[in-house]
Image (spheres, one colour):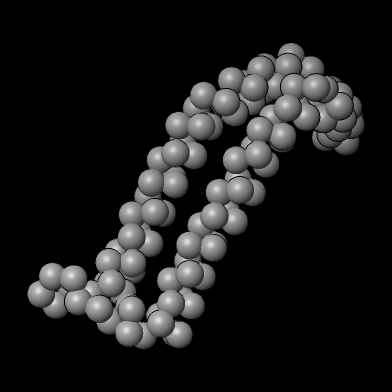
Length: 112
């Protein structure tokens, strides 16, 4: 019967092995290559909204149609951007991250 400590040591060795593989490094690279630029772009977009709301009052209060002004459109676009970005990430993950993750998971299952 194996103890929990022995099992943890074996898993640790498997993790160390997987961490050193080119597939794991590629997975991290692909993940970072998407997440960091997407996060920066979203934060810039959000901060633009905040900055314009604070210092471009005339522009943001410009009426487009009826009582709908630029600020309302920008605010609603924040929600749209969030959902679109989540959808894009889901597609990217399905195509570029999940296949590598499955391969690494299969190797982990064999080694564990």
